[in-house]
Amino acid sequence: MLFRTVLLLLAALASPAEAQRAAPTVLAAASMQEAMNDAADAWAGSGHARPVLAFAASSALARQIEASAPADLFVSADAVWMDELQRRALLASETRAIVARGQLVVVARPGTPSLKGARGAALARVLAAGPLAMADPASVPAGRYGQEALTRMGAWSAVAPRVVRAENVRAALALVERGAAPYGVVYATDARASARVRVVGVFPPSSHAPIVYPIARLARSHDAAAEAFRRYLLSGAGQAILARRGFLTR
Image (cartoon, rainbow, N blue to C red):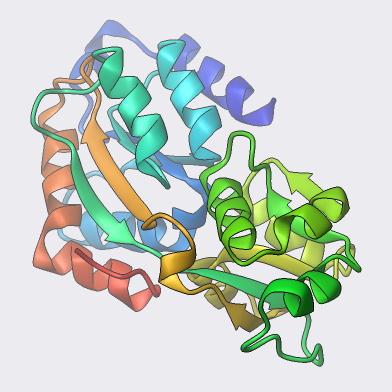
């Protein structure tokens, strides 16, 4: 609700002159917060206007774009929502690319025993004791990856009734940080951004579809600064920033 209110305020404040604004608006998956802020700071440090950043679940951002939210670039945590926008001709031609890749992990508060090597029934017994914090598998990429991994590992049927479905991956992380859930399924980059959790298990890459972060300029945006920032994120300098935050680069 707050995110929608912010976008509506941005739209209300916009003037015709701002069509040529120097600072592009970027809608990015919640798991990209630190990396995108680092990139925006570096971009601004080289003399450009700092991009305006807004973060939420990829599903929520895609719906805002479908509702004509004022934005220039979209960075999704999976291909599904980017595919949906492309199907609806909402992406600028030939601007879609993979900007980063990720890993899926289980986190817990310090002192929690490691789950390394746990699979199938053994993994299910631990996680099903719950609650297990996850982004909502019905709509959020991190949740979908998590459900797929747990299904392939033979644990989902036992774990599903104990899942606390969060609105995005950072909300799932916060549940573990507060002690509201003993375990959570998040991206490795989310775990790295928090001093209050540690990684206790890593999902094998073969247990879920590849975790990719596609970026694209929106069809309604003809902002040269937005295109320049998109290219910067895909450049060696931009990729180095993402790598420092734990993302696997292209």
